[in-house]
Every structure is written in C-alpha cells, then in structure tokens.
Amino acid sequence: MISINHVSKTYETPAGKFAALKNIDLEIQAGQFVGIIGKSGSGKSTLLNMVAGIDRPSSGSVAVAGTDIHALSENKLATWRGRNVGFVFQFFQLLPTLTAAENVMLPMDFSKTIALRERRKRAVALLARVGVERQADKLPATLSGGEQQRVAIARALANEPPLVLADEPTGNLDSVTATEILDLFRDMANRGTTVIIATHEAGIARVIDRVIEISDGTILH
Image (cartoon, rainbow, N blue to C red; front, top):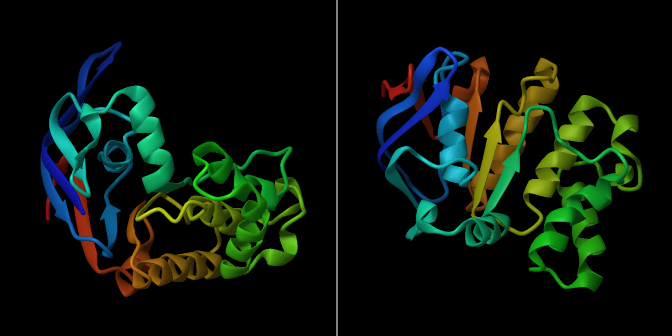
C-alpha cells in the first residue's frame, strides 16, 4: 500500500537547517492499523504529511498504491489526495459556520465522487457510523470535543478513501473518549482501510497491528 524509500526532509530555519526526517525506509501493507509513536519534534507529523502529499520530501520517494505521489503536479496531487486520503487532525478543523453534516459533505463537494443528490444521505450515514447522527444539523461549537472528533472522522471517510491518516487524534480527549475513538479506527481497519495514526496514546498497543517508533527523524523499529 505505502512504500517510503530513502526519504529525508530538511527545513530551513533561522537557526540553520533542521533535519526532520533522515533517510526513512518504510513499507506499510493495505488494511494495517499502524501507530507512529515518538516525542514531540521526533518527526511523526512530518512523516504523516509526506504520506498525505501535504509536504514534499527533500529527497527520496513516497508511493501509495503504486502512485509516486510527489511526482504529481500540485493540481493532480490535490485531486489524488481528495479521492485517496482522509485526514483527521488533533484540533478537529471543522468549519464553524457549517453543520456537522455539511462539514462531512465538504470532501464530496470537492472531489465530486458522490452524486449531488446522495451527499446528504451519505453524510448522515457516516455520522451514524461514528455515533453522532443526532448532531447532524448542529454547529461544531455546540458539540463536545469527542463529538467534534467523531464528525471529523466521518468527514475523513466521506469519499471512501483507502487510506486514513490521523495526527494526535486523541490528544484533546478524555481517556474514555480516546478509547472509543481508537476503537473506531480499529473498526475502519477491520473493514479494509489502511489507518496510520501519530500518537502519544499509551493504550494504543491494545488496538493496532504495528508500532513504528521514531526519534530525531529516524525510525527505531
């Protein structure tokens, strides 16, 4: 599913060059639930961004399902990402002026992979899948943190992507809600979706298939 070959990423900073990733080689199989763990600044988020095509490597290549994504133009990469990747953020990133259902419909509107007349029905069905269908017509500000994260997960699933990435998705949630969110990701993987999360979550070993530990831009195991 994912093949990362000799990937390095260096940023220019006021203090000089900073190597966020150093010659990473990694293979992840389709349908795996993978946890990337490491301290803040270890390179977790940078690695996720490489797989999502949000950021480009300084050297090396990233292939997802046979597509060398960083060889694509910006427009083609955006189209590819919209159809193939769902991204879940720590701070939810829901648009405050849209209802929960409208937030879930956004990726469908962008990629146009779902017929217009089907989008609302699909959004509500996805909200039901993550347990918040009753919140479909409410604005994010009226929802709890856990409910907002569930809406964000439903949005990530909008276009049935084969790959879902999550950056610290339980970082702002209480332990009970965090466990429920991890179980949702486990269910997604059981259904065939490849799921990769970057996390500090101590209980992650209970639900994932594989742990990848990263430190100072290098994979330890």
